[in-house]
Amino acid sequence: MQLLFDPVTLVNLILCIVIVILSIIGYVKIRSQTPLFIGAGFFLFGVSHVATLIGLKTALEPEMIIVRAIGYIAVCVGVYLIIREIMLRIKIEEELKREQHGLERRVEERTVKFQASNKELIASDAKLRESETSYRGLFNTIGQAIYILDPEGKFIDVNNGAEVMYGYAREEFMGKTPEFLSAPGKNDFAAVVEKIRTAFAGEPQEFEFWGLRKNKEIFPKDVRLYKGVYFGRDVIIAIGTDITGRKRAEETLMRVNQKLNVLSQLTRQDLTTQIFILNSYLEMAKKQATGQEGIIRNIESGELAARSIKEITEFTKDYQNMGEKPPKWQNLKLAILFGLSHISIGEIRHSVETENLEIFADPLLEKALQGLFENSLAHGGHVSRIRVWHWIIPDGVTIVFEDDGTGIPHEKKERIFLQGEGARASVRGLFFVREILDITGITIKETGEPGKGARFEMTVPKGSYRNYQDTHDGKEDRP
Image (cartoon, rainbow, N blue to C red; front, side, top):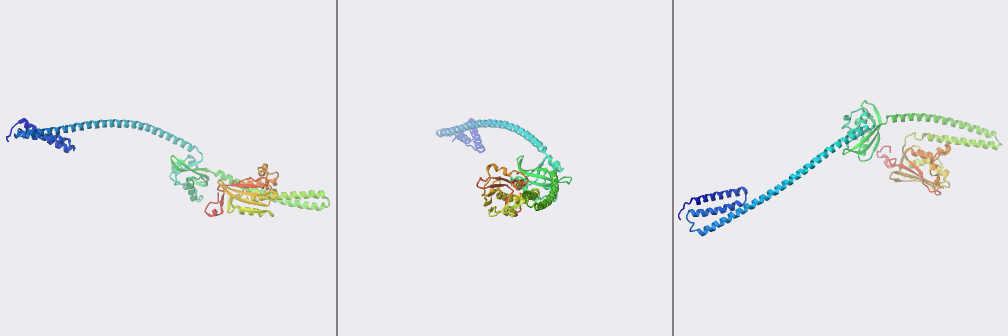
């Protein structure tokens, strides 16, 4: 073996060594096998250069050709991989550019949409402010006091009417409950809170409330509660009306009625006295007219008229008291029996099938029911049975009074409730019955079939009837 010094071969060897080292570094950095193929090819070239420098080129020429061929193949593979990676990178870059263009386009579109949405939001906000301004204007032009309460019963808004009614500024209401406005000792505030809860559940409420103004003046007002929506929130809308004037008018009317009742009572007493005196004179006249039949008949007619006047006077006492006392809960069966106790129905069988039904009616309910029995006795003809029963309807309860008499002709079904001719007819007739029932909203109509008996249907509105078992459950003694 003889060393040969060939500068070109030596430089090529050094370049091969550098390329191999760079290939290894490239593999370590990018974790790609492509540099290794390039490095392997130049490593083989370096081997052939070493063989040349140490004088083995001629001896190993076939082997060196194979080594160089393998080296070229490795370099070609490396170049191919490089070209492929370049093409792939170009493709990726093009895709990235397309994605970038698409992203930019989407950004532009979203920017346009955002700008449009922003304009809509600005317009919506302007409309909202305009709506709120309109609402506030309408809210404040209503003369009644209006309060907006949250589910906890605290004020979140009031109108000018509430400020005027109580003398407080709007800010002084905020966050407080109606107890802040309550006259001490005048309201059952636990009941007020319960009514607020009931109203929030969807059932409107109405009640009287004694308020306390900022100047310490106490006054009555009517309050109505409704469930509503206030700018997207479920709330209670309370409407308050000062009823001081109405209360004063009621008190004045009560005093006037009391005076009229006293006058009516004195007049009735005087009439009763004069009727007694008249009867005495008529009795004396009958004795003096013995044997004069025509005069006696006239005197007896006068006595009959005097008795009618006395009877009418007694009934006007009941009519005078109608509506004087407040309505109350009454057991219907007991009211019927009390009414029957004042009259005699002879052999007529009666059946009262009202169980434990109680209705809210004027204290003269007993007289009204008595009037229905008297009507059957006076106009029913051959009445042998009277039945009173009831059934529940969606809007209340219907009470039926029916007999098996001659009934009422179709053309008279409405006229029987009109005020009859003469005072006696108006006081003792069905007109009087209807007037008593109407005080608490109870309606009456005749629905019987002519020839098969009279049938009166009395409809008691919802809230004005209950069962006896409910009277001790803590409910208010009002419908």
